[in-house]
Length: 234
Ligand code: DC
Image (cartoon, rainbow, N blue to C red; front, side):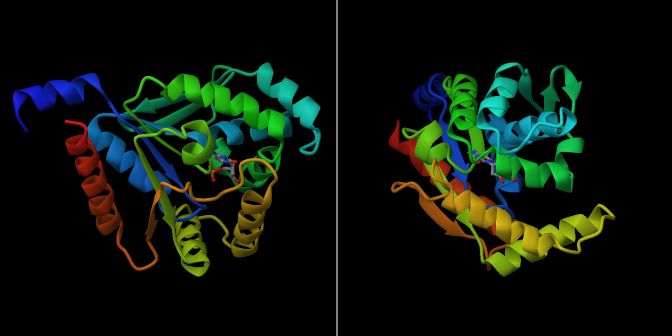
């Protein structure tokens, strides 16, 4: 890399979208890539999880679009990318671990079907990422949040493998994995069939199937794509 291309990179940081279903390895790859590039890793799912937690705490119905939209509008949801991982703050409180629990996971998938809730989330996500220098992961980043993202990756894997990965993560945390596979399948179904911004690969996304790939192999492919993109822009 010569000096001028380095300057160029310094000036124009990419927006990288990583979408895909749960258990495909998005979070791991996104945080690894962000660390490598010195970019912010913004996990959009954490925002839906934060709203879901607020709905649980306030005893709000997951089916009440109006109520949930108002709840979102009256919330301060912040993603704080730190070197040690991402923190999620809701109204000033660190909820990073709580939002990984199963009740919140299930609720997040339900609150995220509502168009007006999504509108609010998408607006916040655009504000956070529009300056570039971000790896944003989710379900609709390449299709809706940043349709002009510099690079779009759709990370997929066989459902059985995704279920096994989730169960292993649960086991490592020392938590019960019973029923997890069925829950994951149901969330998948909901994410893929909702009327607004369903989980689907953008037409110009590079689809990577991680079923047979190790984390290092996926990371190497993604890094190769980023390198190409940076070179193209020189
Ligand atoms: O990625 P995750 O498992 O933390 O996401 C939690 C839920 O939020 C998931 O069921 C779908 C929803 N979600 C979404 O609809 N759009 C996004 N961009 C990110 C997540």
